[in-house]
Amino acid sequence: MSLDQVAGRFAYNEDHEAFRQTVRQFLAKEGVPHAEQWERDRLVPKSFWQQAGEIGMLCPTVPEAYGGLGLDFGYNAIVDEEMAYAGVPAGFSLQSDIVAGYVEHYGSEEQKKEWLPKMVSGEVITAIAMTEPGTGSDLQSIRTTAKKDGNHYVLNGSKTYITNGQNTDLTLVVAKTDPDAQPAYKGMSIILVESDREGFSKGRKLDKIGQDAADTSELFFEDVRVPITNCLGEEGMGFIYLMSQLPQERLSIAVSTMANAQKAFDDTVAFVKDRKAFKGTVFDFQNTKFVLADLKSKLQVGWAHLDWAIARHLKGELTNEEGAAAKLWHTELEWEVMDKCLQLHGGAGYMNEYPIARQWRGARVSRIYGGTNEIMKEVISRKL
Image (tube, rainbow, N blue to C red):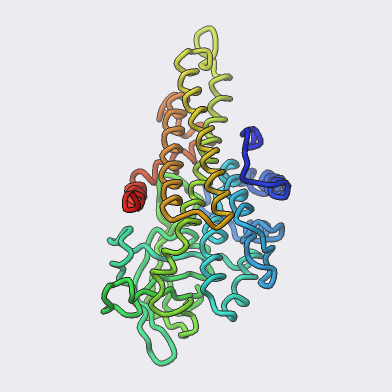
């Protein structure tokens, strides 16, 4: 089974699809055979990042002047799709779809030359640290500070739920450089913090319901000194920068969740056709066929909408609200598909028997922690 079975896609061209085959072959050889071990180890090794960097899977949109391929977001989306469908848990999308864009758009020439080539090669793994204990999605309420002391910032505070937190070599830390600014967002900046800075420490790797290999972590900053030149872009513009990149960030999540949903469906079809029940298979039951027909119809709609959103983004036309709608709709679809497919496998008691269980558990996490989709509804409603 592969995503080639999805009919009628229109977001990609022949070059995109050739790249897809390269990505798929790499994941089949270097990712899939190790995924279960990485889940047990609760970490993806850095060597896998470097292998991916060698074939151009990391940060493909980075310009050639900084070591990248200078391609469009469609190549990022293909990596996201194939990794989700294959069940390979490395946090490439954060680096390629989010962090690279911040450094490319807002970084100084020195910052770009220093970090982008290493991100492309996989030598450097990045994270972005926004969420704090007790603040959740209320970004303006963060308490981490970066106070000036001569030609340095001194950072103090803590972050949590940070993707790539254990592996990170460079973290984009959202901090208040002016805690007294009104409104509060005007006092926020993004500070680059290298992991070998004195006072910076990585806390526990958080236990989660799913995505065990994802190194989601706590980070701590205790009098961490970094040069003023480590500010990304202009001081006080951090919140504006974060908001400006939201359409792509939300689309990236929609891409992965759509591929997850398709994988759950495909695995379930194979399972029910093989699972014996009474004198036939589970697939022979009329209810099973009704459920699968309903899900297949919704998946067809989902792929059409996703390609529409990708095509708009490639033309620079995807709006913030459209990106929010894509994230909302596709994550809700993923939840529905995985929930109904789980029932066709026999319910929660069967959850640990099948490889797709990792993705089922991961899908449930977003429903329990954070209320992300309620935020997406709020974003969309403001535009109506």
